[in-house]
Image (tube, rainbow, N blue to C red; front, top):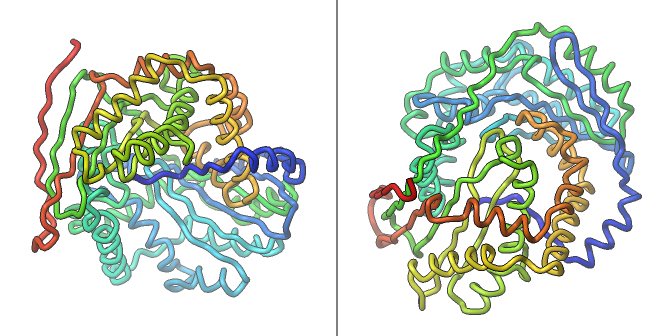
Length: 462
């Protein structure tokens, strides 16, 4: 499983919070150009640098069967030339100005970023504005780049048994939600993809009205707005439709999937469908779920590491993951690998025992406060980076969530009680809402890595 959580020791937490005055949060200034482009600026004057990020509201969850992976391939092609620049010239210009740049695609967004000396930001704005409306999709460049993406898929997913199992698991769990789409796309769609599809996707979503510019660093907000108005303001506004907000039907169906792949070790995934912010019955539930996961998997002192890995030695590795911040609802997932002394069934029962304990016994006030301190420390630690400050703002804004949630996040966590954690454990982490995948290893000398899956399901609880 792939997580983006960071926990630091409690003592470091106290130190960071005491020193946070040095990195005191400056207010975010918000602007909007006449063509619909939003601009968010947050000054941070600790170093003479700035990060510039352009976020588009489009990602793999906007795609449909037949064109999966198109957002990611288009991200690659955004570096391959415009009417004014040749292939890779964008990157060369940023490097010549002492900067670094890259891009990333997620389920709910595509983002492009540059880190530069703050007095060189105009270079980034000029280049981003150019490729927002002047991209050239050269067939020869596309042919090369789609092969690069296919190789990425082979290395990151098809040659990694756990990643491939998790990908197959999501398709079984989400028959309707676009969160079933892999960000990198299905290989069959990459094989059949063409330049015309990329052009349609670019024309549909790459509009100033569908973009947000986020700048964090040693800058003056009004000056950034004027600079953005100069470069992005003349761009033609193109209206974009809103993606469907698909809600997966509530079906009490206990799915169990068996996957056979060449692998060194078995692998277990247990998932429970859980609401993200904006989908929960009560606003506090996503925050309680985040702390529930932190109780289970919040560093070496957390329950699963202490009891399942080091204590009883049932698991080689045991993880828990959940995110409150998504465009659509997703899952709370437990995953791990049993030690040689134990079976997959033993590990599943051990995970269930951890859940039952959360359902039967409220977390102690002491344990909850320790976990909250760790999570708050992680957030303070992230604010030491101008990149992650910009990323948090851009991600929330692009997901359709208010970036101001960052300001209330810590207070919302602190408001969670042991009873709330117990309540969400009882409400969501039950067998009627359980989805399981097991990776059963085949010998590693198999000639082909081919997934063979068998899904069995039955209705429980009405």
